[in-house]
Image 1: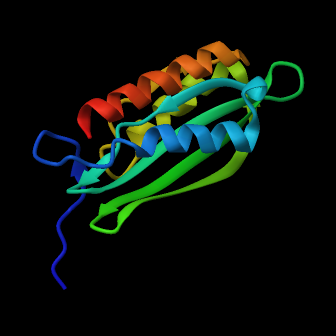
Image 2 (image 1 turned 30 degrees about the horizontal axis):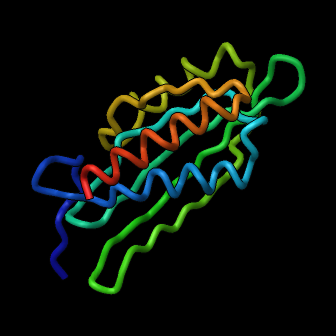
Length: 144
């Protein structure tokens, strides 16, 4: 079996731009917007019309601590339609001021180049989350 390495998105690989908005909606249903503090959205790994993605979410816990969740997704567009399979896992709890340094460490210790994540502050605000969701949906519609 011949396989090609997964690579970052570029103009020749369309990826699955609808995957991020669907994954964000999944995250909203899983944790609720009021619980979300910060999100780190990593650039997707793309191969043709297949895509893998990662979003790290911090959610309010006790005091100044945050629970850390990873949301991964696998997405594919075929002649039969679109498939997006998100999965969420709680990774642990940490003080909120340590999270940016933890994310930075993950990026630099990764075996493959994850790229720098985009940090989005939600702070439990439904409007901030909706703005992010609307923006990612518009980007998906512009690329699709």
